Image (cartoon, rainbow, N blue to C red; front, top):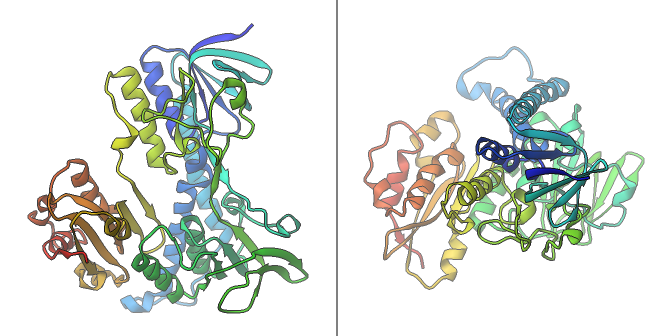
Length: 459
């Protein structure tokens, strides 16, 4: 006989625990199912561990530049990769424990450990037990995508998950994939001391960004000695006695790259393969993502999909917002929608990229009159004082309404400063709210009003 609950939550990524908190506070009984450990991608092998590694890599990088700041260090700077990993692991463990304790302590909630599979529209099976609920929330996340390249199964390749277990310095790390995940690992391991080569099939890095952003990112990485191979075709891998050969057939450079380790970072796919969606009648798109409407409801009444699995955002912050949207509609009589969300994300190389709204390319493709302001970070006093002047700030504005349409802030604190622009966009206020504001000196943010005071028509 099936056990009955008011709600079932499958998966403990960012949306799941927070939604469980809202449902239990509303007096609902909740079955919470997790296959492995709490926290999802972000806590276990995504944002938290990678940013911990980025911090260690930045410390090594700045230490090697000690003479630039008039500081003397007695001997070469070294990196203890076991200590780096131990620091990362401790941060991750604390985060997992915090989420586990939070969820486990919720009144009216029972945790089930194991793989969940839908066996009907409102029935879930886990470890041979049947659970029923009128409300089911799917929050199972995604995993690294693995392409069907020749020879991939014959070599010990790494993914973003496997990189979490690395406690040594790869002599030559070949990163296949020149987008957000790949570039963060490329820079951090170069700063740890590895030789690093990035292989990208497209003609430029992070192809969804504007060309000036892509070129600036390439310049930042190249300055640190990262080898970049673009226009790679017919990628394949094969074992060698002294490492792993990656065939790239690039327009420039040798057609084969010999590395000691290979990181495959070419995207992610949703964990919907073995979830029993067909038995429940839940529809997926061609890429495997669960189809949802603007309030994250699937085609089956009483079933929602949140987080990476729904294809409506691939970030921790969008997953968190998913839970807010579902809770607002279900519990607060507040009709919030995914369509109200403004696209925003970061690339956490150093210096970081903060991105919101439209790109310049997207703005040019429209039929509206658009203004743009652009400023190199060399004009920012705080950046000069810190010795971090690479990158630029760019903002795009609708000429008629004065609304900010998008921005790209590549430079010191760009991932933080961009939020002042994002908040004004959410407020639907004109750019003059920022351009006429008085900001604190000396900061990076103080130059954003100056940037907006020099807008020019985008031709």
